[in-house]
Length: 219
Image 1 (tube, rainbow, N blue to C red):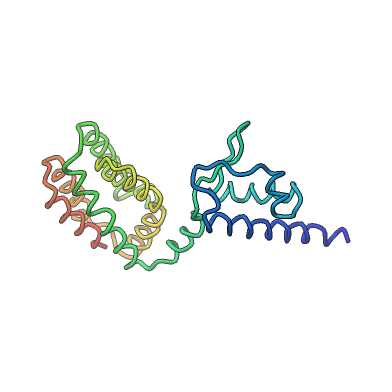
Image 2: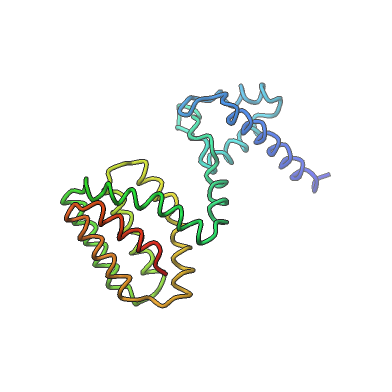
């Protein structure tokens, strides 16, 4: 009986999760809305308060629920980020390139029009650091390269684009790692980064977008 208790408890938490996720997906609460209290949810779902508490902890970890100390629980999002990450992780290299074309190329065009002197300083600083590690350890270079591209996207001054790139950067990182494991790093590819930054400095969106397309397609 003792051995079966954890399994039974886990099953109850899973059932609670299914019910809570169903309510979230069905729009029972708006994003940002305060959720019912644990006792209220327990009564509504017909389960114990402890089971509700454990289910809520899982939803907090998944990024769907936010608990504000002394205030209650609030709906943070409808989609589970982990589900999205699992989908993204299964994308092929060609699919990742398509995603980068849609997201990065347009963002770079906006960056060329909207960049500030501070944006240019941050991009130049990141590119200089990237150049120091271009022929060095792969993971260190990728980290530096992603920082440059993040500053580039941020220069578009569109929080949605910045957050989307930040969210997908781990997928871009995996794509770069696979590509650079197969093909040697070439100076000409790094030089494209230099040309891209120069186009942004000159506020030439068409050239910046063309260079970005080339860069994404390069192995």
